[in-house]
Image 1: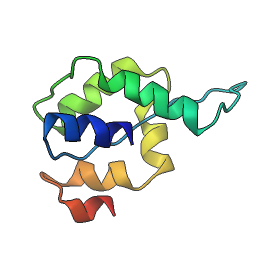
Image 2: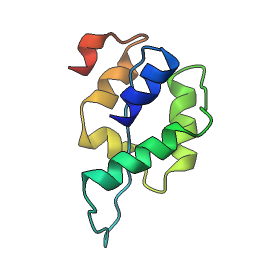
Image 3: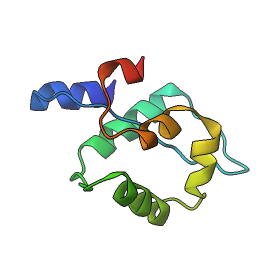
Amino acid sequence: MAVLEALAEEQKQAGAIILREAHSGYVPLGVFNVRENVRNAMKQPAHECEDAAAVREYLSGTFTLPLRRFEDAGVLMKEIGRKQQTSLLDFS
């Protein structure tokens, strides 16, 4: 929801994947916590990358978990990594 709000405010169309690390001992705090953290993240300056390889490199240096764990846990990152451009249908 926070991503949609930010995009509407900027009058832009885009897709987004939100990745969140959870380590052992993590206590889930609910949807409100996630929504507010994403809202705060959307207020930060954007980091632009030229291609998927640059995104992977940036994310690998940002997370403590290996990026492979995110890729293995879901289909979306694998699919997007194989394509040059995505469409709205890719996110449904």
